[in-house]
Length: 412
Image 1 (tube, rainbow, N blue to C red):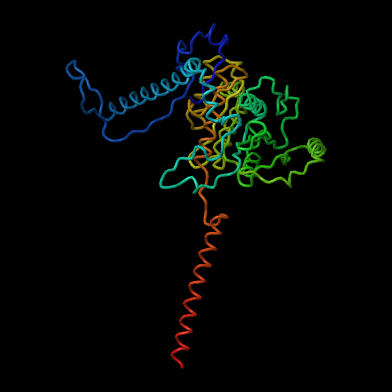
Image 2: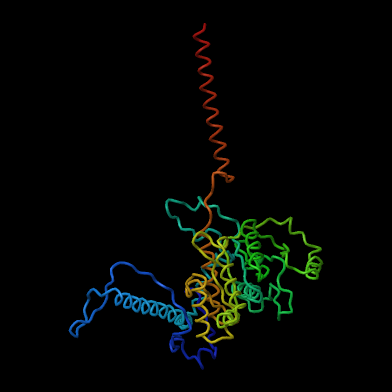
């Protein structure tokens, strides 16, 4: 169940909001998509006090069609809204499944701890076999998002859930306030600690400058990511550049092999999104659009798969607000608000653990699905071509030798 989370003992659910199904649909708080229609103008027509199906005049049919489409759109948006809201109750009912989901990511063979293996969820479709794919030794999931969105905290939460140790110290440093430096160096975290199958990459926060974001995304998605690499921007002031240079004095990331990004997790703060979506300020509206523009950068997608979205800090808001935010992001980013937006609050309950595992499985399954095929110039392909060439050369040499011998025999 994608993107579902709740705090089991949260007063948001069991006092002021006893059940998500008791929430009313906010008629005026959500926009609705526009659907186009064509063809003949059919509609309901009243004749002699009875309602029947018939042709209408042009103006009447346009008005009826418009009203009908508005009603269809309204019902469609309401159904999705209620589906997302209901998911919080569903999660409460199935929160005991988190260990089952975890076992599908981490498999235990006797006493040996065996983690997920890249390619485990490849579907052999269209005649393709698992061996036809270029499977990496390690899957790399890239975390990106605005400042203070909770990327580093998410790394710690994922690590804690998969290691199943409440006393596990935080692996990624987290800033307590806006005064903190944040992440300037790319950081690789093996999940779980000590394994070698997949990792998370924590990154520097997105900039307010779209051009800088595009440059940063292009670097990561086309040239790969390196642990310890310093991420610099043209807009960094002299003081910040000097500070980062001092921190990087022992850095030798160039010697580290670049990792190809296999999937992307886009992290946003629920509180920040709510503030932006309810604001009439033009600057804040531009920030919202900047998030959408970066998210929809083609380089972050794999074929038709856009990144997943993780919504953080939802524990500070009501369920109705969290649902509104997911609906808003779904329309803004062009993804399903229930299936591809995962609400992960600052909680340690079973529901949150299940959501983290559902999100992680979604990422790994889609990373497997979008692995590239082996090309003719892969190491195996080159070897096969070389062998074929040598065989052909040997056969040709034998034939030439036979022809020469035949001519010599005839010349005697």
